[in-house]
View 1 (cartoon, rainbow, N blue to C red):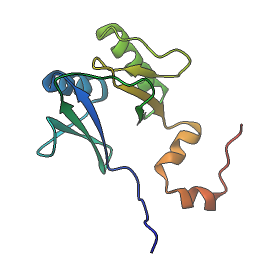
View 2 (cartoon, rainbow, N blue to C red):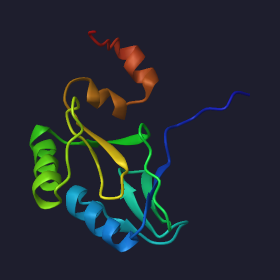
View 3 (cartoon, rainbow, N blue to C red):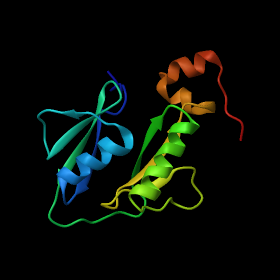
View 4 (cartoon, helix red, strand yellow):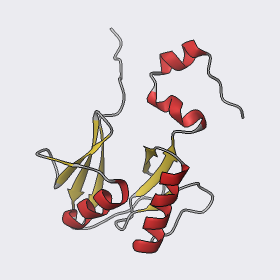
Length: 136
């Protein structure tokens, strides 16, 4: 029998100060902290996913690895942009709608529920059955 993947369960990031990271992600994205688990902190990402915030002694940011979060709409993307640039002094990645590196060098890509982004919340088989296609 073939393995069937139902989606991603979690993403793990490395930070050198877990308490500051919890405050940052709670502030910017309103993420709720969960109890227990591997790592310094866990926070809820959607209904069935979580982010593990792992405390490490030495940060080693990567150039290309990243993860994406979906927010509601353009207003919320603008809220994220404003908060990360004005409050935290972070820079947006050039050429992207709302990509940035958190204070620990982890790259985050933020999208919203407009256009085809909504499709990523549906099982792929439903997308196919609905005949949804994307313009190039």
